[in-house]
Length: 216
Ligand SMILES: Cc1cc2nc3c(=O)[nH]c(=O)nc-3n(C[C@H](O)[C@H](O)[C@H](O)COP(=O)(O)O)c2cc1C
Image 1 (cartoon, rainbow, N blue to C red):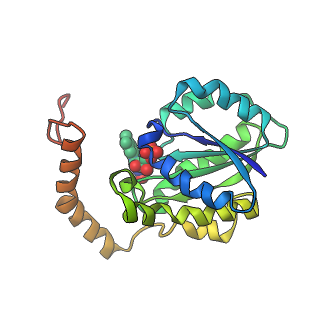
Image 2: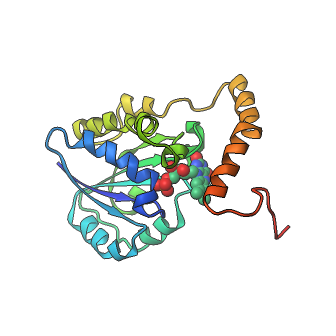
């Protein structure tokens, strides 16, 4: 099997969490001889090549970070340049996000099923998982712990040819947290996480408070 993988993040490859996820995913994917080629939507110079790969291959996988509960605008712009295929191509998706509960990715998942049909492709399922926000800010073992889970899913995709198995369904984790956890998370976000977000923002060159609303 040969898979065309498209990283749909608007972030450049170097800083993309999706890229780090794909690195582990493709390690598992290729263990038994499956091959792949990977493209980045963030690099507009690649768009012609991505379209060419999409047109000439029958197994396409788009990996997408959730941006404001949606698929990124840049990916949408690229998708609008694709023509429907109707030639037995399978289109599968990895949908990942920062927040941990599976429920907030379900609307995006439903859209992707429609998208596959609109593009005249067979829907190969969506691998849904949150809790990936920190990948970019972690190193070594912590990053390895978060991303290595995708290696097994690469193996699963190579074996099944889609993301429709029970193992993929379970991979999402909790749909919603129990009330006790939600209260605890709320408190963490109001205190420790708030402090750490401030630090991250300052590290990224942010000089205004995080709650700054100049157009109020
Ligand atoms: C502008 C912006 C909006 C985001 N919106 C969401 C969101 O609605 N839900 C969510 O779970 N994560 C959200 N995230 C977190 C990203 O989905 C997450 O960090 C992802 O791993 C980023 O992947 P990338 O680095 O490949 O773009 C958002 C991140 C940014 C920068």
